[in-house]
Structures are given as structure tokens and as C-alpha cells.
Length: 173
Figure 1 (tube, rainbow, N blue to C red):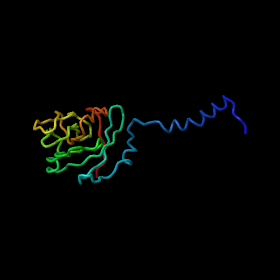
Figure 2 (tube, one colour; figure 1 turned 45 degrees about the horizontal axis):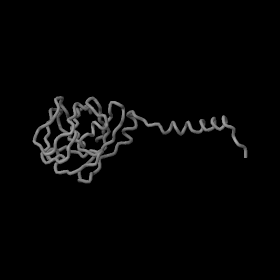
Figure 3 (cartoon, one colour; figure 1 turned 60 degrees about the vertical axis):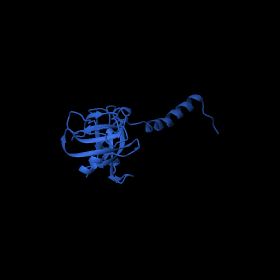
Figure 4 (tube, one colour; figure 1 turned 90 degrees about the vertical axis):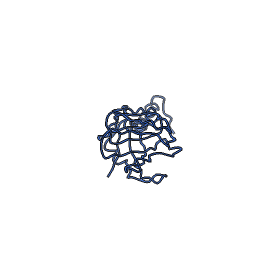
């Protein structure tokens, strides 16, 4: 058995390790072609509501995956996340409205502090109300019109560097 010298060993190590390091790089940017292949069709949550997979793309180019319960009827939007005591960190609810307009929310019977993320019809975030106060009738909203409102656990937006101007993507039929 032949023993390699120091410089030959270092050269072999570099040649063999380059593919390993290159394949482990984290991608922090949104790739439109991979989004559709990763997206799931609507499923059902533990609460029995239809859910869908969505992705926030923040200003750093990071893609944050979430699972959203769908509230697209008047009754579902009226109930929202009322009476919930907890919610997984990557779960939330999307309120889908027919028209893009000024939407106001209150926290009656809602025990979880929430971030409310207001999204226009182009799926651009137009405003965020962070850390709403549970169990109040105070209305909250943002000035620019929105077609969708996504509710996530409080501090979700800050934790993931999500702000107005960032985008949200999901696949719907």
C-alpha cells in the first residue's frame, strides 16, 4: 500500500470535497420553476378545514413555507380562528374575499395573538398588523386595499423578515 505525501493528499482532498460543498449550498432565492412542483393540492387540517401550501418570499429572497386553512365563505371568514387555544408555527388561515377592498378585523373570541398580513390581488403584501391583542373588539386593518388576509401566530412576520412589498405564492385551481 502506497502512502500519499502531504501535498498530494491535500490536492486529492480538495478535488473530492468540492462537489460535496457545492451540493450543500443553501439556496435563498425563489425559483419560479420549482414552486409549482413543490406546491401541494388542498388538503384537510386537523380542524377539518381545507388547507393549502403557500410560500412567503421575503426581501432577503428566502422562501418560507406555510400551511393555510382556507376561509372563503362568509361563515368561515366570520369565525376565522376564534376559540383556538394554539396553532402550529407554520400554520395559519387565509381569508379570501371576492373584491379587493379595505378589510377590517377584530379579535373577538380569538385567544391567540396574531400577525395579520394583508395581500393584494397580485399577491403582494400591502400591509401587516403585528401582534394583535386577543379577545378585543378593536378593529384593525391597513389602508391599501387587499383581496386576501393571512393570519399567522404573532411575531411570524418579524421572525421571517416579512414586510410590505414582499410576495406570497400558492397554487389554486
